[in-house]
Image (cartoon, rainbow, N blue to C red; front, side, top):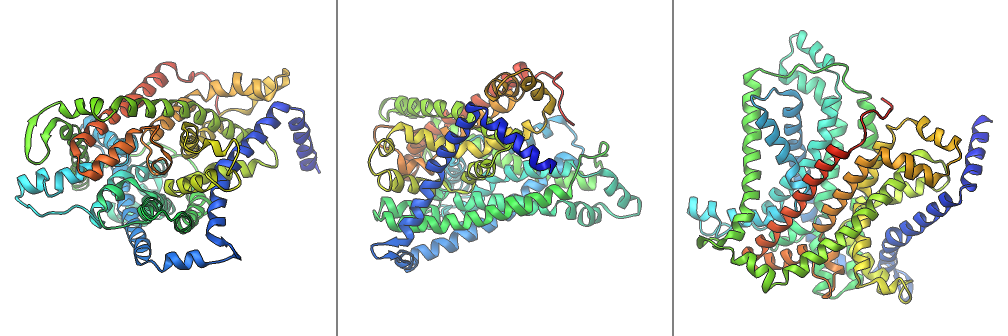
Amino acid sequence: MAKSQSASLDRKKLMGDPILVTTIVLLIVFLTIFILYPLAILLVDSFIGEGGLTLDVFRRIMGLPNFRKAITNTLKVGFVVGIASTLIGLLFAYVEEYVKLRTKFMGGLFKVVSMLPVVSPPFVLSLSMIMLFGKAGIITRFLLGIYDNSVYGFWGITIVQTLTFFPVCYMMLKGLLKNIDPSLEEAARDMGASRFKVFMTVTLPLILPGLGNAFLVTFIESIADFANPMIIGGSYDTLATTIYLQITGAYDKQGAAAMAVVLLTITLLMFVVQKYYLERKSTATLSGKASRERMLITDKSVTVPLTILCSALALFVILMYICVPFGALFKTWGYDFHLTFKWFGLVFTKYKGFKAFRDSFILSLIAAPITALLSMIISYLVVKRKFKGKGFIEAVSMLAMAVPGTVLGIGYIRGFSGGIFGSGILQGLYGTGVILVIVFVVRSLPTGTRSGISALRQIDKSIEESAYDMGADSFRVFVTVTLPLIKDSFLSGFVTSFVRSITAISAIILLVTPSYLLITVQINEFAEKGSYGIACAFATILIVITYGSVLLMNFVIKHFGTSRHVKVEE
């Protein structure tokens, strides 16, 4: 009875706040039109023919040998990358949380290396792999004397994707290991168990759901990846590249839509298992913070091999990143190693670099605050308000995480160059900068929303309730109370969105028109042609922009972040 009265009171409060109601309605409309509608159009394209419901399109694409091969290739790469990334992520997380490192420099090095791939363009490591281990690679050709080595194909994609995605696993597993109560492991040690046995019988069972969670997240990222297979895949087709070639090479929009549905089905199934089963199971397994500080391992038989392994991986990743600026400074990679700035000069003279950087910077800068604000609003509604559409808003805003960029790009082509919006205002968006900004917003929304939800759950309810008691409406409370308390998350969401937008390629490569030049599209184009000097010059400037943005964010948060005196729930 009390529960029904409380729900009735919440509804009355909601209806008495027109700004809040309008915000909810506009959010539902936005999410429906720009996330659900493009995906629904793909289903209609795939299943509805002239005679009604049909599976003819699926029969046709399943009859294509290259598509069946692409499915096998994609799943194979996904499983190997998922396992390898999870193991490397676990290694780095374990060393950071359990091992006493000899110097602070090593700990800092491991952290930097773990962060590098997260804020870098997705194809930088593919460029490095080709330049280090390709036919004209420094390591293969000049150090080892191998002239016919090929890095293209399965192993090239697998290595590059593993190095790109293992930081995701590292960040997930680091939190799990940190929350294990040290007394559980110390009790096993006191009973005479070896370090290895303690890990296998105590630590591993506790983090097993988290390992499964990390594997599935990486698996989804791997099979959805477009940039790396496009550059280093060679003739080894994956679903993402096959879909792209089906629409740009074969001009088969309906076939591409059906292929996109197959890829979307795989990613959605994995996302549902990861989000609604393994993530909850992982949270339930570790239900609180460690009760006291952990005694770090100092035994050399453990610290030395683990430190050497991490150091070797860290140095290899750093070598890969150093390779890119040097690729832009050498006259001809693999043949003439005299230093030159001609590639940087050509970027801004012959290849319209100013326009590419201006367009990318402006569009990303427009998308970033919109994404950050939308993320905070959605987080606020999910955590702090009760209304019937809350589950819909949360689910759909997170859905974009499971939708591969290529699939979203096909959905936007089919949805806004035809479909229900074949004419009118929304059809006019297709081919404009507005549609690119919307794609940037949709792709970054889940990351910002998760960050906002975590931050809002820490704020004491009484802080906002006191503002409501003084007569403030939802808009005033959000702007004057809630937003200042979570400004760190807002700034983080702003910069994360900017970095993700300016380095995005998978969705926008299908939507960009000649009126807009984007850096990532330029890099992809020159890398495919084998013009590595120009590609590296573009990539080097892009890396400087992204790292500069992250450093600026850290400076702003450090000096102007949330006050430490704010009361939060423990």
